[in-house]
Length: 622
Image 1 (tube, rainbow, N blue to C red):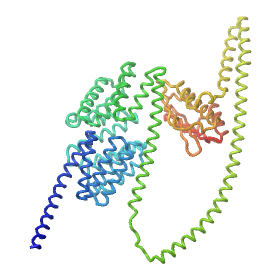
Image 2 (cartoon, helix red, strand yellow; image 1 turned 120 degrees about the vertical axis):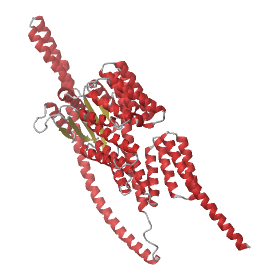
Image 3 (cartoon, helix red, strand yellow; image 1 turned 45 degrees about the vertical axis):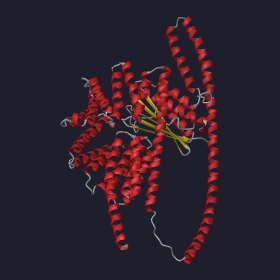
Image 4 (cartoon, rainbow, N blue to C red; image 1 turned 90 degrees about the vertical axis):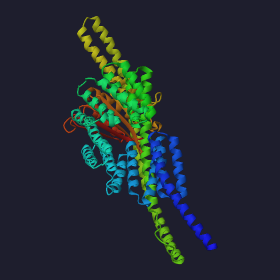
């Protein structure tokens, strides 16, 4: 009787468990689809709820596929809250689980997501590494849809790294793979992406005629507006921009408005890419009206671009809107926009650098964990103890030898450093003395020489020697200008950062746009005043030379610190010159002399028609 009871109990348990497993399988697929839908609709509470459901199913059934998906959905949650370092961490956790169960498709898909995340954070090398690793998992599966996305990502990364030939090669590879995609919708998207990406590549190189050809081919796809409205808007906007640059101005505003209307409609239908690109269209409309001198309309669209860019965290368009508003505004309002631009730019630069470091750290730690497997079993305790004792004795001997060598090297290094520091301090004293001489000369020129010339000028006028008086007036102006140039700038009353901002503001105009990077990030109190004076005067010389000779419309100024050196990097888009044949003017020679006096280096790189880059490296302090 007992045997029959246990037999029936066994079969009851077996069928109950099988029924639960079937139920879990059914629930799993349904819940995963709901999670994807919640993410694309930006419904964070729903996504959190679904993730918790999946976690409960994992605990019930101990299914590793579910655990990998839990980590995947946690990554999606972090993406919705714009905490990309945490998203990267959970993607890596999901990958580790999928590797253990040999789910190559899941590994490849998560690596693709990580590569896109890295590219958006400007970690281009990391994105390239993740993409290539993903290819190893997906190529053997012939997962054409994801392979097409991977090669497109590699093309975008190569383009950012100014490797245009490599980018074109990857785009063509993606297009070729797109032909093998069985799903008609995804195949059409591959066709659109290829023509849009190549068009943008040529557009960014100002090859607008070539760009127009690709955008028009993309728009020729059958029913593209009805089937792919988001990509239709993208192609139409890019085509309108390149046509406008070629002087084809027919219906330019009307086309931009059409794109804007379509994107606003899609925004209402929770289509995330459309929402993200609304600020792009608004910025283009602002630029269009600015060119047409419709400044009120330009400001209206720039304000709207700023509003939507903030809402969608579209940082690139956010910066563009701030820059446009700083040009369209006046006085304190313009200064406020410019300061917000500089502050945001510096903040984003710092965030991007932190993200790159965080990505690398997460990758290193997770890969290290994967490699930590059991290698050896416990051996004989006695032999292990003897080996450990021998190791300790050897280590102690090495440590003593190492300490002796390190002490000797540190002593040599200390005396070398002390000697170098004393020489540098001596050089600083000489420079300070020279600056004091310049101040005295400037004062003498302004108070005495210029004063005497004024008296002589009046006498000549009274004697009706007007031509001689006019020539003397020019001499007097030259003397006054020379005194101003010799006058040394002071950072005691006005901080270095504000001096630089004031200098930039003096030269900034719609025809000559100046961007400043890294200024706020550096603690300038660490820098010696002679170093700050050198940087200020060097930058002033660069800006004046650029305005006077380069015929540039844009200049990018970057400050950075590496170890104990400060770098000033100045790049313009002017006409450039041949450094091998053209001699340096007196301004650049004086600049080189100033830099070398402070143990610094001056590097000038330029090509005719490709602008000029000047890099100055000096010690941060004594």
